[in-house]
Amino acid sequence: MHPYKRSQRLSILLREEIADIIMRRVKDPRLGFVTVTDVGLSEDLKIAKVYVSILNENEKDLTLEILNGARGSIRSEVAKRVRTKFIPVIEFRIDESVATGERIDKLLREIKEKSETAD
View 1: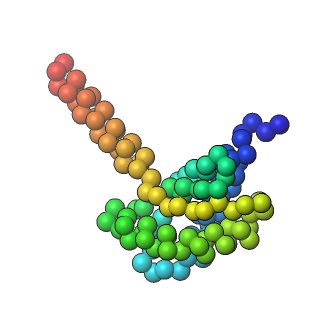
View 2: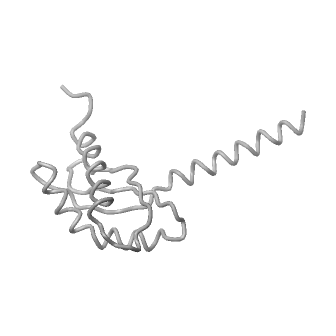
View 3: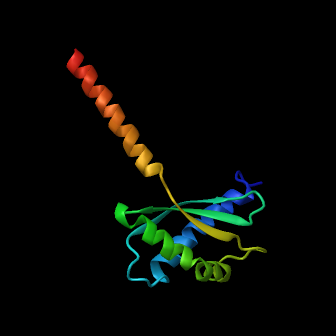
């Protein structure tokens, strides 16, 4: 028995394959540096929410538009690479965890500086 549920194993595989497809197959010159950070699968494995991190904050909307425009071809390429009964529908989303982590780090630094100046 594997320690992970099937949806978790498939999401890891999809993350790797989709990242490779974006890097090698999506040939849009407007597409900047994109990192696939996570894939969240629904319990029935029919919907895959692909979370991406984008280097240039100003290009978030354009990058999402490009990726969502190419999701049909990305899905068909995933179908060639991954052997499963059903290939999930792909939805691209911005991963906000990096920005949230930076905000928390900034707040912790401010608290530390205030406590050092109080001493």
